[in-house]
Length: 180
Picture 1 (cartoon, helix red, strand yellow):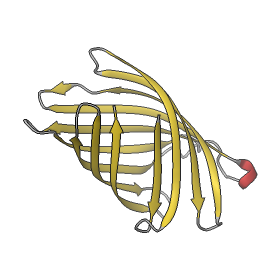
Picture 2 (cartoon, rainbow, N blue to C red; picture 1 turned 90 degrees about the horizontal axis):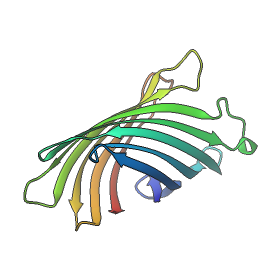
Picture 3 (tube, rainbow, N blue to C red; picture 1 turned 90 degrees about the vertical axis):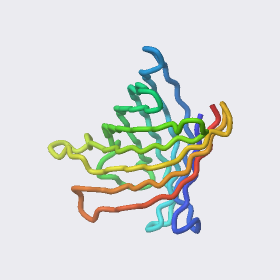
Picture 4 (cartoon, helix red, strand yellow; picture 1 turned 30 degrees about the vertical axis):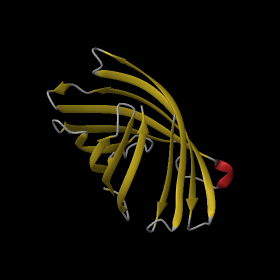
């Protein structure tokens, strides 16, 4: 289970909420994982002043071997997002992407801290004849493990659209809490 609530303009405007549930299976000495996930998303469209509900289905496979205090990971995810046609006409519905992420993490010896960074790209599959990489996501963060079950993650995230008209570039400052 997961939840996500996002604001923009320095916490002055509601952007979106996400509620999700999924399952996964870990194997090969806890190095590989496969899973599926469903998300319900609620976006606020400022231009049209309406709330847009979306449904997202994901399937993924990942591998993350450890090398001492280092962990290197790769994840491949297929993601399909369905929009409500009653709220407006959409040129493409559903939108399907293949997302690939490469990540590196370093657990700092004798501390409860872990540095991490990742780079991810979205490969657009929903537009026949124009299947391109149209978004990049970069993350750098510091995770603090409060204990074995609780952790806080402080991060900076950059989302950059590429190869599209009027690309949007967004910088996020974030804090996440996880319960394991």
